[in-house]
Length: 173
Image (tube, rainbow, N blue to C red):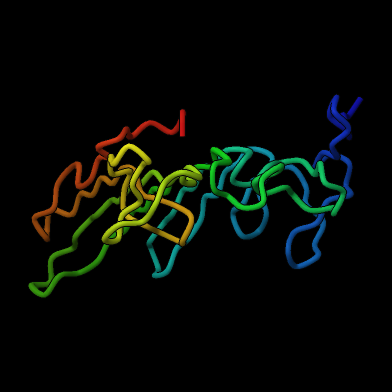
């Protein structure tokens, strides 16, 4: 039997009653655009030919259920905004380009992004915890980058580029 409601009464993707932002029914598995909402995963093209992106996120970022009855997947459920919701997303890009000398260059980029705590504040382009510890650079307003790893041998970039002084784990925010 397919479960169409969670124990707390939320509507699941399997119900066939949930829709994306364009009004298309959401189904399990991958969409034509590379989203797998049930698995909290996106795998697809990004930007230029040959550039790929893999995104992973938790329920607070984008749930795979509807608990507020709007027939859409919930975002920051129970919170007015993403702040303090515990939301996170990871992005892993890969690609190839030709440098100025005609060399084929392979690059990778990985980042962890979190929704910031309510008591955090912005100072000089960074989110900072109430105790004064830097969380990470501001991105998309309510979010901070807590870790960034980049490898691009053609540009001399290799390894960890940023690690939050607070902590780079996705939990306990």
